[in-house]
Image (cartoon, rainbow, N blue to C red; front, side):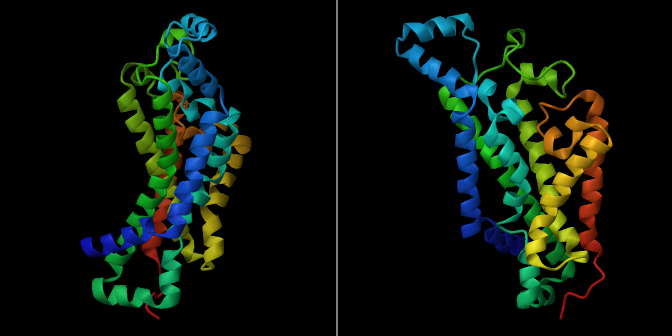
Amino acid sequence: MREIMKIELKRAFINTKFYIVVLVSTIFAIGAFFTTPGFKIAKNWFLYMNGDLDAAYIIEKCDYSDVAIEIWMPNYGASSKFYFLWLIILPLLCIIPYGITYIEDKSSGLINQYIIKIGKGKYYVSKFITLFISGGTIAILPLFINLIICSMALPFGLPVRSTQFYPVKEYNLFSNLYYQNIVVYLMLYFLIYFVVYGLITCLALAFVYFEENKYMLLLVPFIIYFSEHVIISFGFNQYDTSLLLATNIINLRYENFLFYLLQIIVLFLFDLLFFFRIRRDVI
């Protein structure tokens, strides 16, 4: 199992498509920094540190309370064009590097060699885990890059609740943690993003039951992801609880958490369809 995992992880992370996705993600992360009010805040701090009197006046009015998390791209939501566009196409970015390798293995006959050598079970598990890791990693990468950029522009510290600069209120999930231990909050934030988008990416494997055209499979996670957002928003009138919006847990309220968790459980169960295939894979 260890050997097949090494091989599959190399296929997922050491390829041209992955490098292109990383480049695109980095562009979104940088663009989100320079096209939001966060850049102006960072610029004022830079000018202040270099003795600009006007900037000093602005900073003093803010009571020196600006920290990196204030200008992190999820804080701006839909008002950040780069962030929101990235959020919409994220399932496509997650699946591109590795998502259709199962179908490619089957078309080329490589799957036969794997199954004879290690068995169907280990092969399926390695595919699922690798795609999950690949999708989750791609999802959190621009968030992490943008956070580093923000931390280079402003000091990294605890947000101050009394300033009202931050979108997290008492009714938001983990709000106390946000203001008391931002490092743990960010770890949970990245973990949730990783898990949710890892599971969304694995939908491509579940749908090999119904479709084996690799180009259609590339679109499956995006179609379900966006359709779920439309249904939850307009069908159930739960706009802020779709996977597209609520995975940014800054938006998620305690009262909606169970509904959000239910969506993740359903997503996971649907992904498990991949392990109950009835088709013969050895051709």
